[in-house]
Image (cartoon, rainbow, N blue to C red; front, side, top):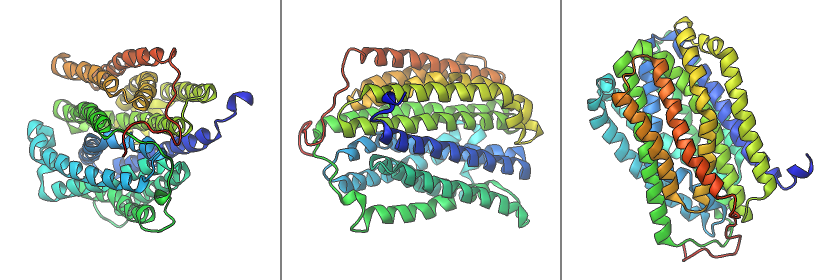
Length: 431
């Protein structure tokens, strides 16, 4: 066992910190929604969670190609500060356009989203998208700098702060409306964005000012690859926006609330594995190749994590959802028990995506996402979905369909050594 762990310390430290970061953030997030569910009506909780889900999805649509590739680009860059600056500018521009498009168009396509057009909520939504754009991208920058522990500290502060604000609002006699729930979520994020942005870009001792490698990337190939990655993100974002909109429109806010709460638990679990996949890609990029020990550690962690979540959801799912309130217990627990069955498929999908990005095989990632999107969207349109449990089943089916293509991609890499340009080795033209 000791020999299998040789050379994996950096992956374990940074990848483990990123997983712990997502899990800790998920725990405080679930606690946040439990407090909200007990201090506000289900309609308010459903509307607030839908707005936050939409906000996160708009950011994903706008900058996913950057968030998942910036860590590996920075990991071997000669001028990482320049890469980070360009990424911030592009992400904010795209996020602003995406947020405005959502407010003006998406809310008119689904009647259940009409509440977002209320002026104060619309302004809060657009502002929140911009804050979250930087908040999520700075985590990608820190991941590329191998600062997983700083990401953990940052998100721990944010998670505890938003929870404290959610508790404080009803204690001061303020009604927990949608606007207050959004404020509790976004105010701590905005403060941390200001601090981290200053730390990364202003001091002369900033790690972004240090030269991290000599890797060069052909600009045309990079732009093409990022374009395909963005197309993949847009495809996935359409599904991510459609699911809560469908649930609110078909089932109503009160019935959709337990489903959305259970779905948020699944998203936390998947994000934890996604963060680890990014850390794995950074280690491979910095080292120039994926060692057998790294592959063993990555595979073992993915299998163990997925199995643990599935077992916990089957045994304690209803008890967990019951913490949101009695209206969430039975229906939410049943949905959660179904949703987590798709976690192993999603993990395979994420590891395949990481390997594809290292090889600049962007179209393979698009094929995987397209398979998932077609499956889910066709089900929403033609599947005669009448219960939240049947909706959860189709989401699992979609993940399994995408995992089939992902598994094929991973199997094709078995006969090809995953060697990459090491430090000091040019990969193409000057960046």
